[in-house]
Image (cartoon, rainbow, N blue to C red; front, side, top):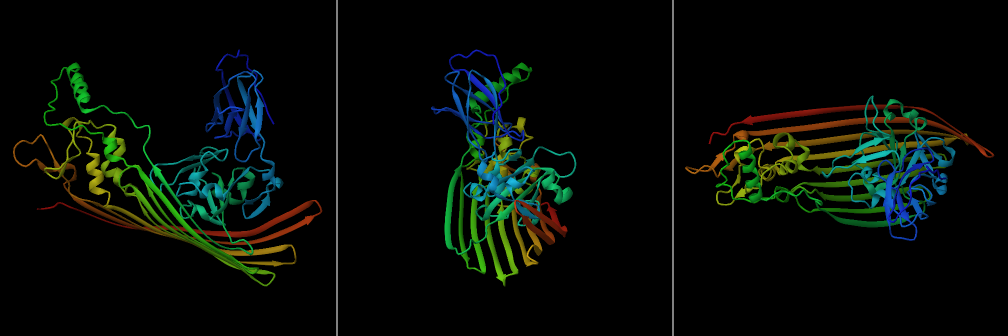
Length: 528
């Protein structure tokens, strides 16, 4: 299906064509591929479905494609501004998707549900599977952060004005606020429920949208051992260009002269530091997974163990995570099925997940504001250098980083599991009873020691002095516990009548959520 907007511009050599890509329901399609047929020229649509591309002649043909839609060829016929409407891929209409407490064929639905296969997120270098959905689903906004382990900012069809702006996650029926405990390799499919008719069953909790995750199960008759590993690198690119020390001294003294002030004495400041280089690194990403699946006619077993090491672009910033998944399903006779699912996670979060920014500021943010005339560290005196007096409001970011990265510790353990029983009776009825538990224990320790710095302006006596901003030692320990319990008892009636079918679901769900903290702190002035 195509729709065109007429535009009366004359074509010339190297003419630019602008356009917008939408779906058949009127939603914009981000990250769609747009290519000039028969050439290597191409581009992609932005988050709002807009694109711009140069074409060689007025009758060129554009080839437009996007995940979940049929590929389409559009002949320009002299148009310079067009709107292209993509049709859903026909083969996806037979997909079985998750809808609330059940499943349905996509062709039987009138609501808006997008489905993403698990393999799409399994091979991406992201510890949180939702991070890999960026640009893959119309109406879904994903903003990723550079800090390893930090949950992305998610919006489904924009920001709502009442209640939470974050979507509800439903993992195999379990309600969650985030899914960082899920191994991306364990995901069978992800459904994004955007339509009010799809969300109604979740009540107010589904007001901001629902992301339903189905994890893998062993396939019938399958015995398989699989191992995979992924290694990647992160590097700061398109770095801000900063002035060198000599140019900074000249420019700063010119500023002082224009203000009618005397020039600054830079005689004690002989450094030439690129503070961004001093704080950044090439990060390494490595993930390893081994899975075992075994299946018979009556029993299906799946287990996966994974380890992830993820370094950020700031020095010493890293995430270490261990994940374990076990599930089993057993048929007891023809009518009864029982099973369980277990997910375990242990992670050591990066140091800046604590109160680093609150105490010392943002290292890379400060690096853009610091003059290059100071050396970060003075080897002769074994101390980090204070900054010039005109920058006393900023702490040496290398000092703050090196002195504290291993003193701000954050460990988290999380266990999510469920047990269920399902019985079929009277041919068309199924009753399923499930009990879930989600338990999280965390431990954050933040130790801020007394800081000694080197001041090159001190010419008599010891130039190593106590930093007046950090002349106290401080220790803060926070232990937190989150407990979430849920139970579902669902009765389903399903019957087909020739070319028609009826599905009716009734039942109830209970949900309990609690969080407790035990916090202790001490502050002390050293006397030696």
